[in-house]
Each structure stands twice: as structure tokens, then as C-alpha cells.
Length: 120
Image (cartoon, rainbow, N blue to C red; front, side, top):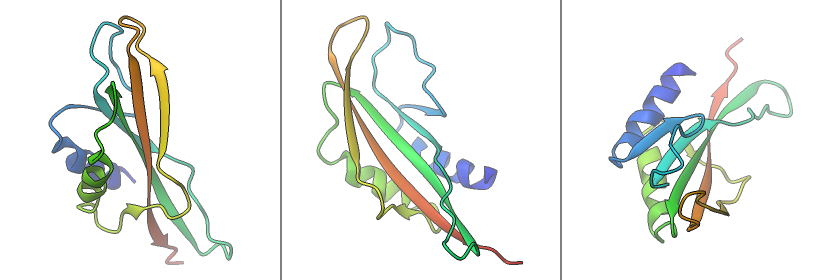
């Protein structure tokens, strides 16, 4: 899995902004404009012969996430062999207030999967 995470990091690094794995390490006085990628629960096929590696990508923006950001993230993640947008989960949006400024922050969550066949 480490190889997959390295490839995801490389694909998202092209955005040229704060990028974190797992959770953001950002101060309350800093702008909340960043991307976080992380592992999600790993789906197992019904016949137990394969799994799918699952990766989540949070895009967090003070104000709002640009309309074209989902397409940009999807395109970047296509650079990772076998990784695709999940058909099982919707793109999600969440809202909170930045603790220092009180500004609204929008967060977009996208789910990606990469099937892997069990070779035993």
C-alpha cells in the first residue's frame, strides 16, 4: 500500500498547495486552503477473492471549493494506475467555521478505489 500512497501524493502534489496525509497539521491562524488524502475502509468482494484499496481526498477551502475542483482532482488521480472514482459513494460536502476568522470553510470529500485481485 505504501507504493499507492506515494503515487497518490505525487499526483496531488501537482496542485502546488499544502498537502497532508491523514489529517492536516495546520495552525488555527493559518488559511484553511489545503488537501488531505487518507486510507478509507477496504472493501472486500462478496466471494472473498479480492479487495479494493480505498483512498479519500478532502479539499478544504475558506469560502468555497471551486466548481471545477472535483474534475481537477479526478484528473490528477487518474495518473495513479488503476485508481478510479468510487461508484459506490457520492462526492460529499461539509461546512464549518474557521476558529480564528469565523469564515465559512467548505470541504469536499471524494472517494477513490483501486481493485486488487487476490493471487493465492
